Picture 1 (cartoon, rainbow, N blue to C red):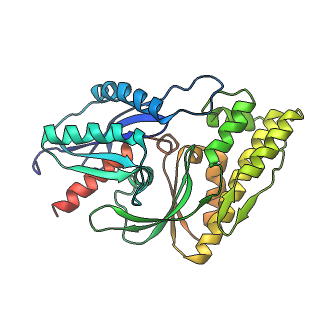
Picture 2: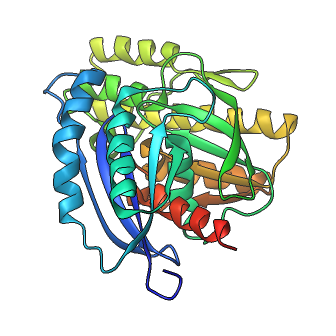
Length: 319
């Protein structure tokens, strides 16, 4: 296998996207496919049983659509939401089961990662390595708003510790609840961002951060009250992203003071928002923290991270 051109298959079945990807030994993307799960108009999410059903239908078709030019040396899969003991979510079992079956049939290793690690590896793929020094990972999506302290391990994985996040709503939930209330389709992030870009002013919302923990529940309730009063949708949309950006900046600054680290990996569907990316960039510059952002299209749920992770683990196991 070492003398041949080897490829690495990644699979991720997260809450709202089925995805798979193939990378080569250098981490270059060879092929990828993904599909958003279907959510009924006006709904704000899916039950786990519905996610499992849709993943089960979509994943074989997506894998069939991939271009794999040579032998698969290893399979990487998101098997659980977090690496912490007891972390479990039924949706991830679809990808894990498929990955386990393929690794058996192909007689190749299976490497399991958390969904958090998948996102961070999607950004770190551009560096070709995860490095040696501890760093922070910021993951902001519809199902997660978490700040994670990460210690790289010699086998290509990470030791992760949750140190910050939200006390109630996640960033993506905040965006989606307001967006759906404004008549936008779920998930509402891209449409709400386009709406915000048309605003010539904004509706400032309260920012609630206490000891490095964010509350989006209060700001969301206030946004809903303003919608009932007939607020300009574009002006409110801009205020939503300002509130999220200021909240994330305050959380980061608090934890950098508690436990310094000179690198931040910022990922997740919400972090594909151009305004939030600029806020995090400015915050990192002020505090002299190196920032790594995934390309916008690889910041949302996709399987390139676990494919790259499998290539790293494979190479390290043979070095």
